[in-house]
Length: 262
Image (cartoon, rainbow, N blue to C red; front, side, top):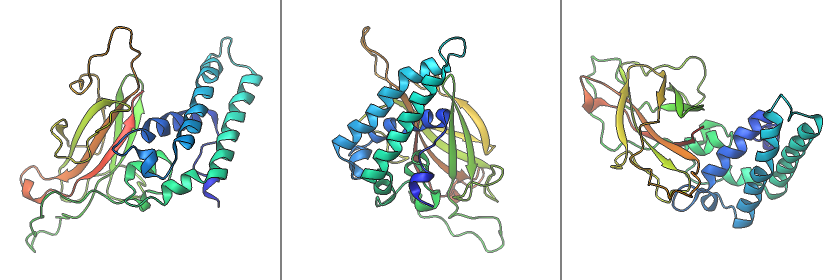
């Protein structure tokens, strides 16, 4: 099966989420992700143009009381087809797939298999567990699925496998999911690339499936001018499995995972 048949969603709502998320992600990082992927500014501008065309039509399409028409549905379908064709002609998602050091966020943003990514290595040398403790798995990374929800909420599902199958679950022998996170405006040039970044907040969860609110995490959001239009916000996460009683046996950090907020 061709990669172009699976990576770009064909249904209207899923494509809308995809084009917004990918455009926000492409301009993050230093260097910006689109450059890291081998895209040119022409490619970036074309990708942003698809979202520009999409947004006003989709708003009318969502208005079931008067804006929804077959013509608008067809207009949105035509934009999807044009995006698929542009990707096919320029091999843009293939370029993403071929990027060295692909991260889990690269994969999840562009609907690539998470097995292509590499977790961030641990920041310390794990202590070798006692042979009598059969439950300690110091090399198990966190593979997190991040789902943005309306109102600035984020639903987190954590797994021990890249495939992220079945129910979210903690690694055997660990009682906590530790995560470091922060909210930024999209386009911020120096988003955290390591869990030691001082701008990140430290938090823990006893569950592998939970929801958090990002509303009060504003310390990294500069004050905008009165006439300025607020840009899309993104949240950056790092995760690891942790032991409340034996922190020296915590697992390696995974991330960064960056997701636009709704």
